Image (cartoon, rainbow, N blue to C red; front, side):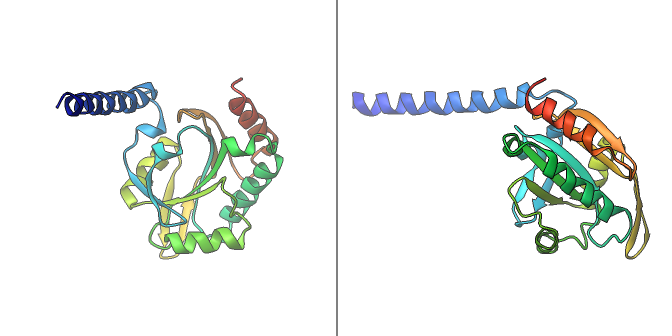
Length: 194
């Protein structure tokens, strides 16, 4: 009987410690962290996640839609250029995140095909889609504006944002002439804790 009580007590203590550890992780997040957003997203593999699941890596984020024929292909090429210039020793500490502003079209299957077609299948590439509300909420956090102007076209800002591993905005580059060297230099500093 004493052995049963001992194991019961140890189980309660273990669960209590795990709950405290989980609470401490949430408490450590700064109030201005994107990981405070509780919206649910789907990635290109159909997995459901929250932004806080990306915690721990330096994030390079851009909002696009995959059927775009003008600005988005330029932004995608900039993201690929950024990836190619990040040091191989740092790349596993980085997530390159493309967030869809057209979740109706950009289903997980569609995002996966887009990733394959563009050679963006390595683990550092994350494609996300959610509902309209979560997408707009995230765009507002980035100060990114977008508007549907036809059934198949959007007008939108062109911004690449860099976030710390705790989800704090570090830097943004705006426009189609994004300075890739500046982005890579910032990513390198953040990854190396400088």
